[in-house]
Image (cartoon, rainbow, N blue to C red; front, side, top):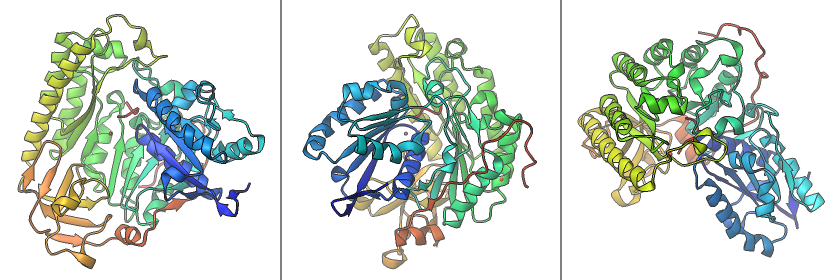
Length: 499
């Protein structure tokens, strides 16, 4: 395969929509493209190949994709050698309809065959016609594919793909298939490889991350995996997303509390506080169980920051149902929440349910929910004023940093912190990937400020890598898909579709 055009290397740009799983898939796509000899475009608008990695969860996902494809049409007509590829969940859903609606698209590939992209691009170029290839089941586990990471200090690690749940509002299981779990050794090998490149923080990913182990019959596998990560030297922070309340067991809470590098931050999707609505959603837990989990987490980790997902306006939701959601919000004291107004997704049972709610009703409830959540998150953040926090310095978290003279990053509990650098300027200034300890001086609903001089600044290998312009680029890591049976014992390790 050649990637040369008129003597120059062909360039690519990947444009990502959707959840963390899509972001991680885009890292795989970038790794594949670079492994095939392409280079990332310095000017995205001038890329030889544009890849859209799409989401299908929200109602406007289709409009957003086709609008962006329409804006690219004049560029494609002016540059016949340019190629456009569409992948991800919307590609899996719409399939061949994409090239019917946008015949200037060259390649359509699905969630199960990301690894085919370079070959499909070459085939489309050779045959001078669009290539549409979508598989109904996983071709190879994504971990076998090369990956170009976006961050020097934090990395996504997929522990499973697919979902076995049947939530009536969600189209993801039909697009990503049944759950497939990676072997523990495969996961830990990838984590160690990232740490060897300087990464300090990993986030374990799964559509239903804490059901990990279902394929090989070990319901305690996720807690064991969390503990195993504690044995990896140099790994400072471990997070995971998104769990499901029905699979959240006491051993996971214990593993979080007892493993030093597992952060005391938990994203626990609620969706609704009404038992009646939860039943209609096919969410196999009820208000009492959900609040019971929150109570146990706080008993084991009083400092835990708990976030959630909430859907407002599900078909048939009454004022009383909505008040039940508000009541759970008040009791749970979330530090933040991803909130959604219910939108129909064709192909889901909820789309054909009776009692679809008027937009004006949903909007009014949504605004009341946002006001309640902001009051609570502000109140919870105010409790942090005067506390010492450890901040992992980040890129792009503080949009006003240039104006305020601050830098930004995440505390161990996941809260966003904007901090002053004091005398740490010039060559001694903190770099993305470095660790700063500072004291919170001000709280807002969605962030904390620390305007005093930092208490300490630790330079890290991740900071060194960022300064040198290096991001981890890993070959695929795989020990194969798990087989049936109990595995060998483990060694002593924002809008989402992971609902």
